Amino acid sequence: MERTLFAFTLALLPGAVMAEPRPCAPHDTIAGALSDQYGESAHAMGLAEDSTVMELYAAPQTGTWTLTVTMPNGVTCLVATGKNFETIQPTQVKGDPA
Image 1 (cartoon, rainbow, N blue to C red):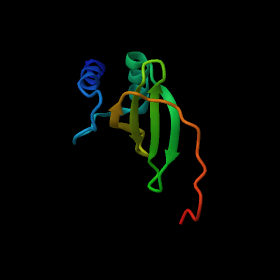
Image 2: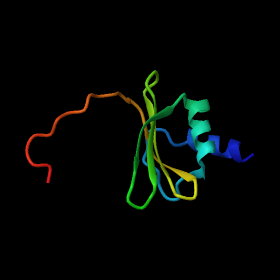
Image 3: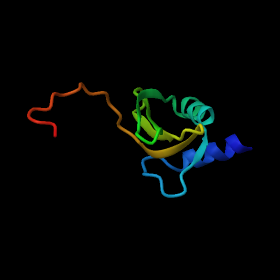
Image 4: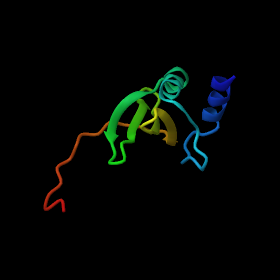
């Protein structure tokens, strides 16, 4: 039941920034749903100063993407979803980065 409700929630959210409250579930549940339903896998991640982990999931074949944040307790929340994902080459920033 919980996974079905989660899947229904994900289906309602394409292309929009999430409004509060954000859909949240254990990390494995979110990652599994993104993989099973959208073919998305993690393409980038980063650690914030508050120990939350940001992950960008994407499906290059379809162009869908999802941005998540995982709290230290293992709960992952959707932040935003979209389409037209593409990988780009890193660029060099000229000048003083400060």
